[in-house]
Length: 453
Ligand code: NDP
Ligand code: 2IT
Image 1 (cartoon, rainbow, N blue to C red):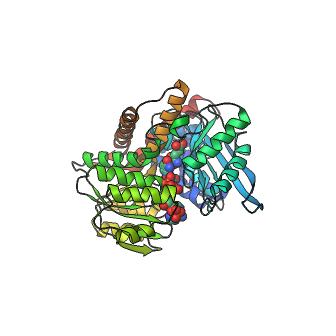
Image 2: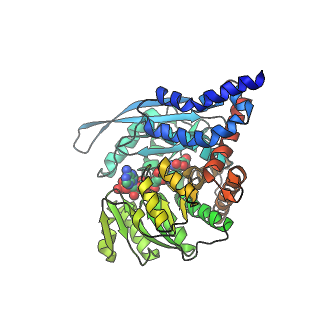
Image 3: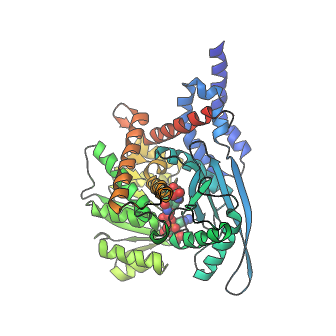
């Protein structure tokens, strides 16, 4: 009798994606993230009746709260501008909501729900007590003066401050949000609440930030890659690496990979990519840091400075490499890109960005035994060090660079071990299954412990 009941419920699970699509129309990125998750988790759930009986799937894909608000601000010409602000507080079963803010013209509810959903399991994988959330705005910082960015950030925080707090929801950076934006938002939060608290992470070091947080996502990506290679009795030494993006994650992935003996030959932005066959060494990377973080210029300037090729409006996946690190944005690597990488004998793909590879690109990697790490495992170093920043703020202490870096290394290695534990079949490690199942168990069990939540 019970078996028949469970069988019926399991069949309902199989049709679950149709229900998600019907309930969340016009949210393709969110549906994509749920589909990828279900591919790993459904077979596991169907073997573990407690998750079926507790209807955990339907519960876990619904955000606890989605806040959408108007952000009015005055530009330098004195004209009123209007943007839309968001915070998706997705799941707080293992800790306060935690996740970045993205400022980019493409930002909408679908993108923030996909990012918030992935963040739940990523945060669980870090082993730290953080729930999942994500927010941001369709505001475009490109081409805006510092004054305009500040005015926008202040107005954004007037509304956001009602919903966040050091024990409730702790935002951080993401695309378009770096230390400048975090500074303006922190200053405004402090004025509104008259409190100096760790309400945001990614703060500057003079006022509560953690050493290594700027580097953490990129360094973590390379530490994870190193673990994957080590597990396959290989190393990073002399590997040729193709990186997309030239922002925070791309810059520090490039720095750490180079430090560990690899050669990085591409970087990109939304205008195209540069190909430097000699490798982007320390001096060249210093130029990129200045170009992108201070001058806020275009990556094409690198090719003029160092005399290499710039490919306008192209992505770098056709360049022959051993390893690819997509570090720009979602769905930037498609099935045909994956086929090119395989044809060129790429052995590993480690995601710095969130969901940069489409589902059919991931299938190509898995079918061809390319070592493939999904972002929720490989880019978890950023939020992990955000978690360490929260600990330091609570303790009112600062840890040394070495101490934070060692903790980051350990966390990335433990995430790798968990992927091996939950994703191995025979000799092969499926990192997609490993990360999804490992993250899911912790969150789902906590939800069940806490009753009808
Ligand atoms: P940045 O804003 O510092 O850099 C983003 C980079 O990606 C830029 O080079 C940008 O080019 C490029 N890019 C952004 N959107 C597009 C697009 N639609 N098409 C082509 N290129 C694009 O962001 P981060 O480096 O912080 O973030 C990069 C990725 O890493 C994102 O997916 C983010 O979610 C993820 N991530 C970030 C973490 C962090 O701690 N910052 C942590 C974990 C993941 P351009 O300047 O021309 O727009
Ligand atoms: O996608 C991510 O993990 C981030 N943007 C970092 C989030 C954080 O809270 O540090």
